[in-house]
Amino acid sequence: MATRAQFANLIRNKLRFDHWRPISSHASAIESKPNIGGRSLKSQILKPELPLTVTTLLQNWVNEGHKITVPHLRNISRQLEKSRRYKQVLEILTWRGTHIGLELSPIEHFNKMELTLKIHGLMEAEEYFAQLPNTSSQKAVCLPLLHAYVKERAVEKAEAFMVKLYSLGLLVEPHAYNEMMKLYVATSQYEKVVSVIQEMKQNKVSLNVLSYNLWLDSCGKLSSVASADKVFKEMANDKTVAVGWSTLATLANIYTKAGLDERATLALKNAEKKLSSARRRGHLFLMTIYVSLKNKEEVLRLWEASKVVPGRITCADYMCILLCLVKVGGLRQAERVFMEWESTRLSLKYDIRVSNVLLGAYARNGFMNKAESLHARTLEKGGCPNYKTWEILMEGWVKNHEMDKAIDAMKTGFALLKHSNWRPAPDIRPAPDVLLAIVEYFEKHRNLEEAISYIRLLHGFGLASLPLYKSLLRMHASAQRPAFDILQMMEKDEIEKDDETASLIQLS
Image (cartoon, rainbow, N blue to C red; front, side, top):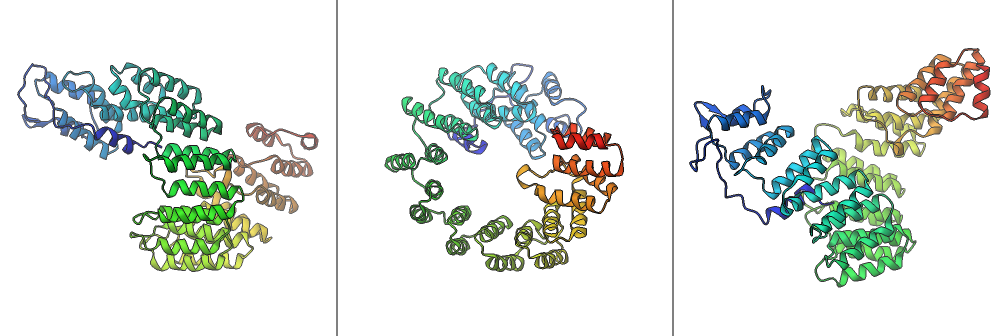
């Protein structure tokens, strides 16, 4: 994805900011000092709490006869950015755009578009684009606006915007086309990726490495090995691009999914030859593909090779190797790597996410004694269990039929979420059978009050389901208690009632 830094560099290569002109309410070419009469425009704007808007302060300064220069305003903007006062930075850029002599450069138009999107959203960003006076400024801001459409999955708007850019003659580089291909991949419209490539060729726009990689990836999504081979051959013959490890890794992934293990291994070996000697990311990515090939030996070999790369091995790196080893059945090797992390970690803070990987492996494999020992160990070393820690323990104890421990873990885990905006994503939520096992335990022991509290808790986090509500309705019917509150929760959760549910409602 064309990041802000990447695009900014494209523009900076063509610009120099040595030239500037002062502005005042009086026509003058004389530069004045930023401090006048003991006052400083910078100090006024940088106050933590402004009595006036930045726009008002700037205009007052000019009305009083003081001069303002572009370098001075840029310096103030940099200070505001460091304090994350983006709204004030946007005010300065907007004010400059209305004054002769302080016009924005292309890179500043780019910055203004990004800030407009960040603070005000798409509608104002679209209005800003429409008001731009020339194609140079429009070219500077088209990528962040297109990227915003991609982020919102707004296919129709993005396609219409591309038509407009073409009419303005701005589609001369691959970046906008790459954004469209990302959008089509994200919305599973892989066939349209090929159409974008054809359009690039028709408009004589050269493909870059990302263009080829997106094209190659779409071939994989369409399960077309033959097409992938054709794309790779075309890329290898294109003298304007270099085939790197990421391209070969993508090709290896396609072969792996097609069951062509030998070809996948060969592609991975070729990819390894192109890995950076200064960054570890490529090693870790190739390890994940070897996991798909169930090749534990290659995972371990690449991990050892990655240690030669200079720089600290991060907690995220250790999490990656632990996950890889767990997936290929290398629990013993994972334990050794974990001990290595504990002995070499530089941070005084114990990163519970690393131990959670091993904890999860123990729980899934039924080694709850090991899980409990590891949990105790992390506490001794200053680890602070998070929601995921307690979820892992809860699921392990449920499978081990230690329900009292599971219920305590459930309560502790959900209590951590009460004062947090974070919520379990759909793909990492507790297993439905685990949640159901707890309410069925309450039902078996006729503990209606605990069951009600439990379902209310799950309802609050969007985790309630029809089987859970059915168990609670059975308990209400057995106790001959009305279930009005339960029905209200089911309506809010948009739970569809079946025949059994309707019968239970009549009984309660």
